[in-house]
Length: 271
Image 1 (cartoon, rainbow, N blue to C red):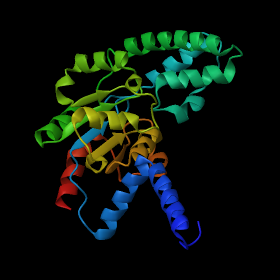
Image 2 (image 1 turned 135 degrees about the vertical axis):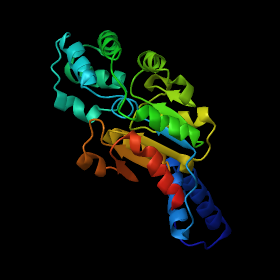
Image 3 (image 1 turned 90 degrees about the vertical axis):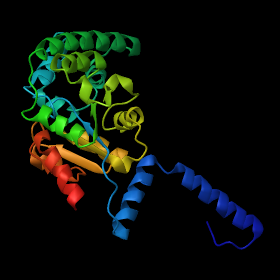
Image 4 (image 1 turned 180 degrees about the vertical axis):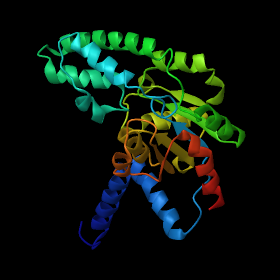
């Protein structure tokens, strides 16, 4: 737009500016707030909600998910390698299956929907059986308990559907710890979209993304945290993501495991 040279021209510039303002995303607004705090030298807001990924972050990952995905798809004639699935670790499992069905099937849309649903049902059966005995990450429950005792709210977000994850928490007796448990089927789109984190905030009663720390073991976990604009983006090395992979993503911290979270948050307060 040119300079303001007349009443009509000024009005046009104002309307154009308002339209641009309305187009700003929540991520851009959150990022702007973080930049403003950094440039002013003010202390960042205290973290109030810690949102934890599940597989590889608070539960051990023995490769059961990849095995179940490959097996359930192989039974329908799809060849998918562990390397093919790698970039999808942390994503909604329905979306992963649908991606490979769309990629390899010659069926029409309706046929692909039916096929993907059948593969997913097979996947759920295999994962449910495998996760009846999968143990937590060492020190995970103690860390979660310490966070709660220190006054933090704790939530979980996961690429699993609710029908998979809730029986696991029930088996471990962990429901009492969480202010929110968000599964991939609770939102319209899984990671790297930020919606599970926003839903956890909504459920826990947190209104500022600056007061949220998201923790996970995959690049997609950190991408979702960045897209949400949260105040803490923490990668853990207890799952599938390597230090090199996680450091390539936006992050505030990379730690050994969730067991180190209480110390990390304690150090943040001291700063």
